[in-house]
Length: 191
Length: 366
Image: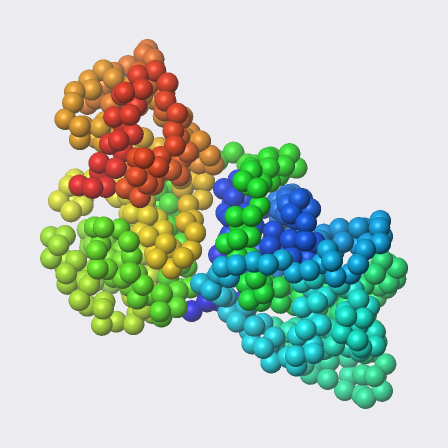
């Protein structure tokens, strides 16, 4: 029953209210998406305080200029995820540059319990999940290592024991398939 | 990107696509990232492709996060308790929120009907059959509650003399009408219930926008009680919000309060009913008054009488000052927040404040 546009009607309405300076909309935005933003940051960084800092920066930055979110391009959740991921990876790269550390130790996935099996799925999310499910395991694995663990493609290659070029290709092909699921016209353009 | 189906062209652009993809995934190291950023500044086509890939990466994360153990209840609880407050405070430091103007009754009604419809449209077939928890609706499902809200909107349309669409049920006795409505909607698909709701909500909206502000002051018999149309608009909106949150609880969604302008209208009207609410105690409150300080977006400060006399409030001090969050205040009025769970502060006659707080839900339980 949902509007096929990538950004839902409710998200467009919320974005409009945020542009208008509606404080309650900021609270709603936080309440609906902080779990995802914080969880993603924590998953990538592995440090609670840093994840909170990223979370704060994501929401504050977005509140400062909500017009940067374009509902036609994608869902609000994805947009916030993009902001969170970029800042999380920036943190990791700064830490990696600051000191040497074992790749595996501070980037182990957190143990979490209680996966929310009742999480609402938008039509967009269902499309993406379908595309991800159809990916070859090698591509899915590479994407997860790169995105959810904050590894560079070089680190992904080392962890999987594959050439760096292969790692890049797997990441590109996996991401390309997801993009094509969202924008079918790209399949022909990228063929 | 010079996109063609030529094999040579495809082979030549794959390395660039690889670079753009790993950049979009934030999976490059510092030097490579700088090089790609420089490229994107000059190459508009490449920048477009990167943007599409980055959007796809965001949708990937959003879609699979919970499958990978991200965005769980554990995550929501793990952040320190004051993170939300810190975020809001920091945000205000970057951009000041706009002052909240109360929304007009017509807009309040339209907004809440639209929000309710949006909620219904996102439900799965299984969720429509979930039980709801308010004791007064024991045995009801989400579908039943949606039917009830639809029927009330149909009644409103009927009382506004709208004949097209025509309300299928016309009896004005609450229990009888409810019985007929539930029986009919239980044999309908959810989509049809939503469609019927939308039909009546739009009809009411169109009619009240034809009416002048003076017309909205006209009374109609809402379940036998004389009530101005403007009041029914806000009352229906409040009821619809409360039931929307009943449905959200049933399907595991968080409560979503109305926008601040709507809250301001609803709460200010409710504050004016304080005398009605506290009258349920059976005590005499002539000459008594309180100041309600409703905090949060959409809140306000209201000095209200507690008796049915007409004291000169400008010349008197309130007997008590009650400070409470505006959303909690409204939910208490809607009998969705037990008094033991309501956090408020009271100064002055705290016993009087307690009596009012205890009786806030009096109109909901009638």
